[in-house]
Amino acid sequence: MSDKQGIDEKHVNDNAETLADSKIENGLSSGRTSSSTLSTTSSDAFPDESFRAPDELLNAQALANLLDTAVRIPFVGIKVGLDFLIGLIPGVGDTLMLLASLRIVYLGKKMNLPKPLMHKMIRNAVIDYGLGFIPIVGDIIDLFFKANQRNVRIMEQYWVAENKDIIDAIAKRKYEEWERNNKPE
Image (tube, rainbow, N blue to C red; front, side, top):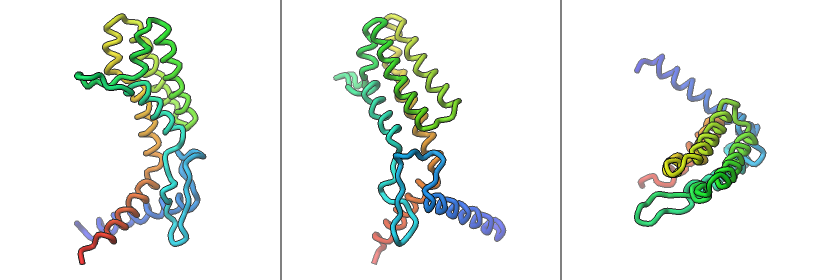
């Protein structure tokens, strides 16, 4: 590695840390909602353990787990949720589960997801709904096409990308603490 490359990498790392620190100090992050809190300690400007995912994301995760993976089928090991079970009721079951899926989409909207991601989430919910109208085959496909889980993954990836600087700063601090506490003597 040349000296210039080493200097450039250090400059990039210093700039990233400065940006993360300024976001942390100002409590700013473009993807953070009001339920994601930041607080600082008096000794440094790092977020503490109160920094967490927004309530909308946590609620969407819980709902998706209930709808898609709440129960494991014995001996087979496949997880199913209310979406599969209630979806077995022709027409009405699928419509009820579409409404539940749209709740997750609404939570994504409250997180200010960009329109292309919102369209992707709506598409997943509509595909899941449409599959429910195909007798037997649609129900079997529904075992494996878990639209609610897919939509939550979209929300999670967006939130992590929007809060990467803060998450990295927390991880770095935790690693440094671990390193200090585990030094061989």
